View 1 (spheres, rainbow, N blue to C red):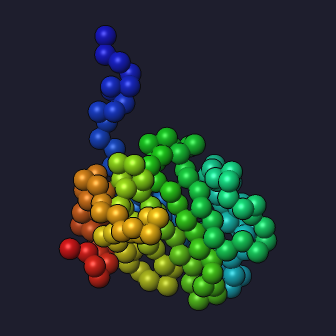
View 2: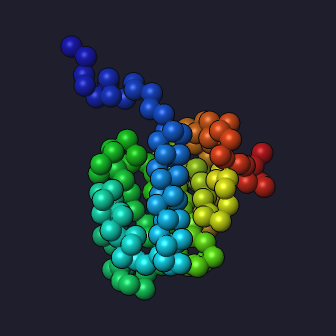
Length: 160
């Protein structure tokens, strides 16, 4: 008898398509709010993330109406997204906001940056974790290469 876990692990999930869909949908949602209101509030972000069933780190500071940085995961609704952490930064409003996706575990070294005032989404070759630049894992490199093949994504200036 084949174990259910073995079948689940053998699935080839299209992480690139999933991440692209999530980031583009988030960007479009918040761009719409920014266009209508010329601002995005923490309440707007929280309402949206509640609909996504996002999970916040319980050790992070309590979110208030002055919160400008949001860190969350989407693994509650989609468990295969467990290795990814999502960020929304509102500190540059009203000019633009930023969405980042960072990989952990088997996707360590993956970083994607989407700024609302740019059409392309930047795939970063390295990110700094705990003050030390981290080389991408093989899974992170595969994911980055797959995204860069799509016309919406560009390499950062340090990408090899």
